[in-house]
Length: 417
Ligand code: EPZ
Image 1: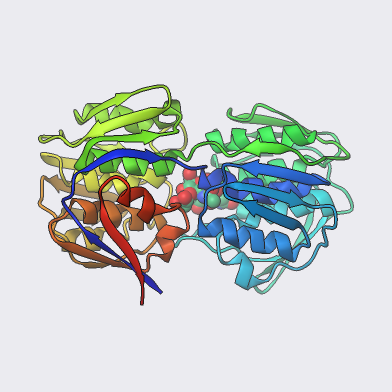
Image 2: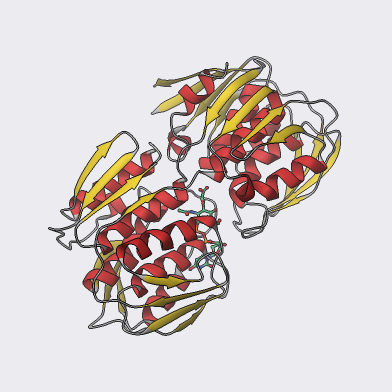
């Protein structure tokens, strides 16, 4: 068990370099097994979700070499085997082995995935899509068994633009006979990154990044090289931190276009920042205007930046409405923020946040990844010392968070308890 100790109110200046996107990397690693041979994935963030996926790849007899942020995955001697619950439940993205193994091997045995407790997180659209491609799916307790003699391309309509279902079905359909079209596909930048990797392996995918993705099946995929795109959620978290307590804090290695939903809101709040081609420099300012935020699918305001953003709303002069629309349980951080002095009332998936309120350091608990990140931002802004327990949630998605923040002047450490 680890806890994080933060002494707040230190102005942060300098540069925070952004790593590769968690939510892209966690799909690219399982996707590698679709290519027979060696694949190289660059700019992989050093997060605990990466380590969990490497353990699954090694269980499947893939040879994985890690050199800093570069991973080499040799799938030549892949052995299809049951993925047990102690591995699958370490993260949500273990479910991408369903699509990848079903595509390559036409057989998968895997226990239900884990992930943050932010909602009920059904995978019915993944399952319905696999079935539409011709898979037979049974469950045995918490275990899924997916098998098919062959997969056949078809039209699949998603009732919601699900990131995970879009990626999983793209993975499985690469080896299906004929053409698959995913209608109402999610449009996230991460999906484009996965499609680029699959196409570099020899897949035929068009339309990634739009609501309609077409996959023409192939018989063979080979190893390929890809670089993970910059993490817009890590970037967004630190940009918000800059608005809270930055003094020319530069967030670098970003794609500003992917962050427009956030920067538009920061403009509305009259935050003090400038945007260059690959960075944003931001300083804290007084008298931020309150604003209303509603999380939406891409390119709307990302649900994963909602919790960090709620901390900034505590510093705005007036009442803001923060409405979460994707996950029914993304307010777990609010009791901790209120304990620190915030004025937030929650009604279902909507929070009313009235500010500005002075935040005071407290002992708090990270209930999930982004809620935990929100507490880090609150702790860095607050007077006195904040102690966050259950920081393992945060380490699942923010690489080298202590080093990155210490380098810009934060007083932050992680201790074992
Ligand atoms: C991905 O989750 C991300 N996780 C999440 O990031 C992110 O919040 C989410 O996309 C939305 O952007 C990964 O990429 C590993 P969805 P995913 O399928 O794919 C419902 C973070 O903090 N749904 O787009 O699981 C679902 O319940 C995390 O980094 C079904 O009903 O999200 C939710 O309400 C957390 N049936 C909505 O769709 C399904 O079969 C969106 O889910 C699938 C989803």
